[in-house]
Length: 440
Image (cartoon, rainbow, N blue to C red):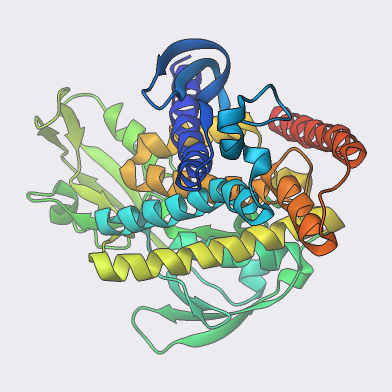
């Protein structure tokens, strides 16, 4: 239940931030260009809070937090006093209307860059791209336990997030990629990850797992030692993989932690350890009591493997934020194209449920990951709103481009037909997204 409540809460917070910034883009540019704004609303439906400013603009927060809108003075939507006609949206030049409508998605793009810039300065926690056990295609391609992936098709990949980002599109395309890998600080070698061998119906939400490639950090791998570490005194080394505790098999860090916590107070532990992905040995040690937390616990004094934090100064962070935005945009557009052609599965779509779970999960990890999540969703809102679908910003911009080319606005008949088509398309997309969410 806590996860459900947390997901709903962080969905509301996330949409509130992103929608407010999007609508503020429309609002700010409209005001700068002399258009009267009647209402600025965060959310739809019944107002929960409302205030009217001296300018006459009504600000409100409404009951349904799944969007928002800015209402302009417009002769198509009601009577306009003669003295205010020059402030009506419909009386503005096509270039001014274009700028006002484009400002919403543009502000989402600006927000994406700002969030990524903030994240890089704060420092993003991640995992070094060391390979764990391999099976299937990954093993056939020559990847082994302990290999560090340096680059994918010549592009450096400092973390597992970068590896995933580079492999997801290549996997959908069934395109082989060249990996530069290194083992134990030795000379880099080139291996070809044969993604062309992936089955046609592989799980596109987990392309790395489909290849038989697993990150080393998912295992109970020793990354380092705390002060007065019983594990170090017993002879464990950095890189050792703990695969059993007191006769109970463990395969992940979480399973190992639970097994140690379940050990009777003061009892010695028997650890089954795999070294260098091969030989196995049993180590016996006495855990020590850690009183630094609210609830005292027995620990063996090891830290998790492959953790890293990438932190940058303001200038480098801004440069990286622009690079990340460019890369994310290219990959997002590529994914949309593959969805339209059927090359990519609808499994790659995300609806409100997946977004809510993602917001809650990243907020639980830390501010760095939540900022990254907001940046990705903000960019997605920018791209989706620019699609040439009537009733979306992109649809209005398409009408304005037609008006610029032909020298006159599109007819009212076309506008009405476009509204119906747009509503149908939007309802279909939302229905499909909900279906995919529920199917998961």
